[in-house]
Length: 225
Image (cartoon, rainbow, N blue to C red; front, side, top):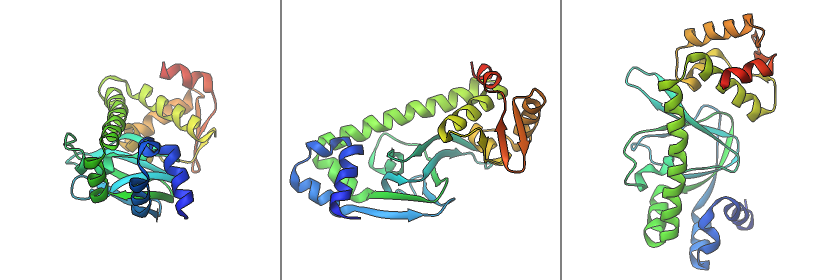
């Protein structure tokens, strides 16, 4: 990838870019690395693996928390054009909890390593403010995930996930396993399977080896309300 292509990406998705001086822009371009990872790669696991800032060029990432007994709670998901700042959480001193970031599919990223991003943030207040602003936006997603887990019934949580997934992919056939769905909604696979069977009995979905097909959008939508 050329510097011109990197510059175009950063101008579109890295808000402080246009307000940086030419020297900092050139320096950032030199430290922005094009990287590719296969599906299922763990990119970040708490402070022990503080990689840096990610700009997603192609693919998607899942950010989640992991309990001591191995239960996962999906916090939010990121796709093309999004930037992942919690993977540089060691740079943001007020972030004290551990999150994990995995690729959901083969993914191409522009990586700004944590050591360089920290130095850039220290000398450029706009970059530092932008990073905290983006972290605050992500925390809104985290609070929404926590609200679902703590206060919503299982049928509503699952319905919201299925609706969001259908909207995201633009496809009524969701190629996802029950185990994956359970990770996304923060529940056990057995519970999700029972709920999906109930949805199927109500004519809302059709279950197959290939995934989950949405049959009745209006009924599914009503469950999300």
